[in-house]
Length: 303
Ligand code: AMP
Image (cartoon, rainbow, N blue to C red; front, side, top):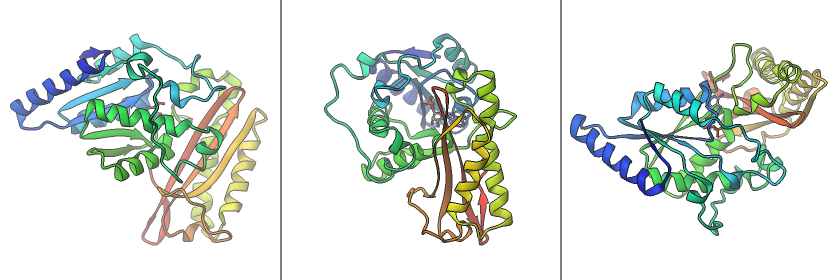
């Protein structure tokens, strides 16, 4: 596994491995997995997908300062480079790119990428500027790595919708591959931020995935429920945990992320539907979601 920390080295190594792969097998797709490190099985699932479909795999680990708000957890974001490198090596990743903030931003960036509309609801409303930081760094990483395919987790469903929009609008020559949410056996969605949770907070955080599973049952048995009714039931389930402080519970179309017509049954939505939540436990903010798609006239949970 090649470990590089500068942009010129990364470009040289990607070019070299791409040419080598082309010579050896005629296959030369570069697969890219951008992360902020402190890797877990969710990240590993993205890397496995990349390995399976691409001749050359690139992982980036960069805690991107411009996507954190002034009162967010940039300084305390968990880091463990040694453990991350071991995991990446065990999965057969070819190149790991570990740039410093100075390498990525030698001077304060005067250019940011802003995607309209899809950035406004959900996390966009509670984390102003966050998605501009995400799209700007992802655009930079795409220019640096030049991947054919890039792998993103549906854990961050809004991020997937935004990146897909950016790629379409700006003609990036890369296929975005959304990958399913990886969960603990008890349902908690894996996240680097789960290490912040106390034992009690972690127990109470199970309300997020439980409420989404319940929503799936409700929609199956009562397809006439409106978004308002489902949201209020979800709030009730999560609210049973005394430590839970709900940021949002929302039900939107996917990937446009628009509100469903008021009073209309969720089961009659004309597009895919995303139920998304953000809940604070102490200083830790957790997100989770479930995507539903129309199959044979019914709205079904996408596994
Ligand atoms: P992060 O390091 O949190 O920025 O995440 C890097 C990538 O891993 C993003 O595309 C995330 O959506 C994805 N990811 C994080 N957690 C999970 C999970 N539990 N399941 C699937 N993908 C995930």
